[in-house]
Every structure is written in C-alpha cells, then in structure tokens.
Image (tube, rainbow over the protein chains, first blue to last red):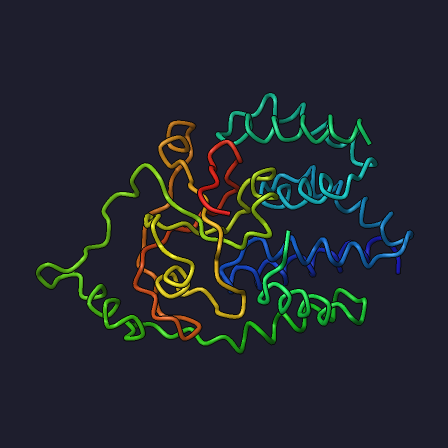
Length: 116
Length: 173
C-alpha cells in the first residue's frame, strides 16, 4: 500500500469511528479505536500513520487536530515535533477563542516529547 | 485502573472489529452497527412515566425545557477515559446535561445512553460560564429523545468543538 492509499484509509477509518462514536453518544470511543488500530500497525505502517497524524495536526479543522494531538501525545510520536512547533506559531497569532488553550496544550505536548 | 465488565465487553468489541488488521473492515462493521440502532422519538415509561410527563412541556406544573444553559453542565462518561479527558479535554461531539446529580443508572436512562457501553460511572463538570467568558458559543439545551430502548426525557447539549481541560473538573471518577 502506498502512502496516498494509506492516508485515504486512515481518513476513512477516522470518519467511520467518529460516526460510530456520535451514534453511541460516546465521543471518546473514536480515540479508543484510533489508538487500538495504531497499535496494530507494523513499523512501516506506523511510519505512514505518523505522517498522516502530522498532516492532521496541521489541518485547519480543529476537530481533526484534536484527535491528532491526542494520539501524538499519548503515543509519544517524536516525528511530529516540527509540525507541532509550526502549529504553535500559527496558534500564537490566531484570534479564535480556542487558540490560547490549544496553544497551551501544544506547548505541553512538545515539552513532554522532549522528555522522551 | 480495574475495568468494569462493560468495559471488558467493549474491549472485546474493539478486538473483534480489528481482527482482520484492515481499517476498511472495521469501517464496514461501524456502518452495520449504525444501521442497526433504533432511534425512536417520543416519551418513555421505563422510569415510571416521568419522562412522558416531561415531554408535555405545556402541562401545568410540568418541567419546562431550560431557557438558558446555566453556568455549568455535566458530562457523564466512562471512568476509563477520565484521565485522558483531564489531559486532552473533551472531544468534539461530546454531550453534557444541566443535571449534575444523576446516578450512573439514572444518567443512562434520562440521557438515553446505549446500555452496551456500560454505566457512565464518572461525572465531569463543564464550566459554561468560563467558556462564554472565553468567547465560546455554548450550545442550546434540548430534551433527550428515546433511543437504545432508553426513555430519555433529560436535557442535553452537544458541543461541536473540543472543550479544553481548563474548563473541566472531575466530580466523580
């Protein structure tokens, strides 16, 4: 499977588990599912998954970023550090209500990754 | 942290849905589950008719749908995800209710939560006043409709955005 196919599958999987979580009124179920599927990946798949999560972390979609940041944080994906620094710069100049809180979270994740 | 029996069931479902190691397979299962879920509108009698009465908002002395969201709301959840919520905040799409005094069973009934996800044994407070002050638009409150053979009748709001951990306090875990 090439990277484009893998990216499409991950997007499709997230959409499916997000729909499932919504229908069961259990929003965190989607994160449980994403964690579980990541843990099933082999090394090559994890490398591709990390690239997808970096793309999600830089997305304009705040909800997609939420999942990416949670996975990067929980799974300690060090490959994402450059993207997180880029996101932090963007959030620092953002005027949205959520930006200061998301920026604080991103800074914490970067600090935690530095400890790994 | 010990898993409840319902969590074990869920874990088994997770494992089953990922047995084929393909993401596409799990997606088909999600779609099938979604189609199978009954979503029936209307009041219920499983809690002694209280919810049927609650749906008749015009009757004298009956509970009315709250006109305002108030300064706090409560998110009923699984205790296994509380530590993650404390760290990441509430995921977009999360629900909360103005009622902070529901037992796990009453929350399942009033909020029409699916029985197969286990009782919501954890309660978290969402600081609505703080969200408003920070510039967030707090969603309106609606009455819970019957679903999953649960009568509903309580009140809920659904947040389309993530709620930062700064606005969340764990009440019961």
